View 1 (cartoon, one colour):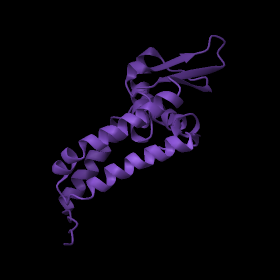
View 2 (tube, rainbow, N blue to C red; view 1 turned 135 degrees about the horizontal axis):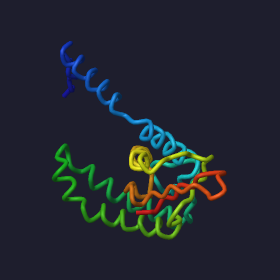
View 3 (cartoon, rainbow, N blue to C red; view 1 turned 120 degrees about the horizontal axis):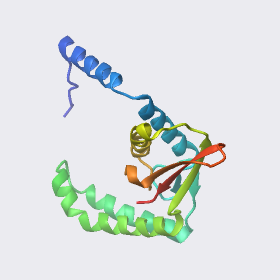
Length: 176
C-alpha cells in the first residue's frame, strides 16, 4: 500500500511560515550561542562507544568480546521485533525483555568506558548570570538533538566556569 504525502494548502504553508518566523523572533543571543557551543562540544569533545549506533569523532573502542555480545543482543531484539507487522505497541511489549537486556548490557559498557564528566575548554566566553539559563538551554538542546550523547541535558548538570586568569571557559558535562 502506497502512502500518500499530504499536500498542504497555501494557508497551511503560510501558517507554518509564520510559526517559524515567530520562533526565530523569540530566540535569544544567549540561547543561540549555547546551541552553537553545544554543536562544538559534540564535534570536538563528546565521546561515544564503538557499539553505539551514532558516533562522534571521539570513539572509544570496546573489546571484540563486548562488541560481539552487544551485536548478539541487538540481533536477538531486532529479529523478534521484525516478526510483528505494523503494531508498534504489540511489538514493543513483546520485545520488552530483549530490549531491556540490550540496554542493560550497553549501560554496563557505558559505565566501564565513558568518563563520568567531560571538560570542554573554550576561548573566554562572557556569559552573564542573566544569560546563563538561556545559554545552558541552548547547550542542552544541542546535546539532545545530536542523538548520541551519554551526558545529561539537565541544566543543573552543565557547569560553565571561566578560569580565574581570564584565558578560557570550561564547560563540564556530567554523565546521566
